[in-house]
Image (cartoon, rainbow, N blue to C red; front, side, top):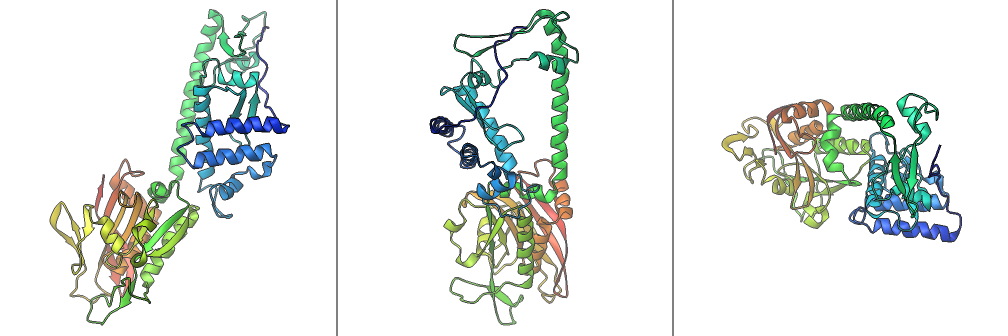
Length: 432
């Protein structure tokens, strides 16, 4: 049997010079187009490489990486928050793309093996061999044992043609050269293997999607790449009882404001959902929050007429609130449609209405989730709606395909009995 390459072996840099060579290769990778425009991928790769070189393998665990690299809390759920696994998968893909374009000019190759967060280094001939002569992704070469494993028959020299792999003068793998008879035997096996692998991958992907609740899917674009979700809530002050709701919106000049029990319940529901997703929350009052405080963040807006940011950001949407003194949700395409509380009934007995919206907003350059009632009961019901798997399934059925990433609006009706918030029902849905 004639072989021109050895089995790939990992290289373990021992000297300071060896480690500096690896770090120079790392800097070249991070300066490439595959990494330089991102923050997350270079940060993870640098952390992994530096700690691998330092021998601190105890730091290269999923939970530790989530805490140290992505600022997750120590108690975060690694099953619900897959930021480490997702980012590591992207790093592996980008490393392959980098070496497919640039090769390994320094004679060192950095890789991140699947299923591991410990970097692997190849040096010299092995690094070139892994890259391939033309820098192609994973240039193919076969071992005699691999042929036996995949084809299901033994490759004895007396029973099958020999398999030769040649190398060019520079030490690169030239490729596998197989006789026509062997090729005819091998191709059907390879095709069947590829089909089986593709089917398995599709099955796992559909299974993973199925395991995600509709709540996870709804919040996914909002929480992507976010460490903190800003919860911007409206606040109020008491007003004479001649006012229908008994309160009025707090302005910037009010020193002591309050939130109702319904708004407090909404804050708790959203915060608990974010904690389950491994995302921290920051509560800010709308009256004292300026545009720079919201820019480039994902924002959850709580409250309708007591939250100036809700009124401002949802105003361009199809379903939106009319300015005060009107307290009503309207449909831009059907001006005759109006959803408002019945002011002939006591506030504690009048059904409420709410607007739920998830959309990408150009003003703050980020995703917004609005949970806004005409009154405070509507806001509480809207928060319950976006954190409930049952209601999110109903919304997903109404939206159909594209639920995961489209802009969505829904108008809800909320029963109110003795001031208590009842179950919401969907009146209208629009997505784009």
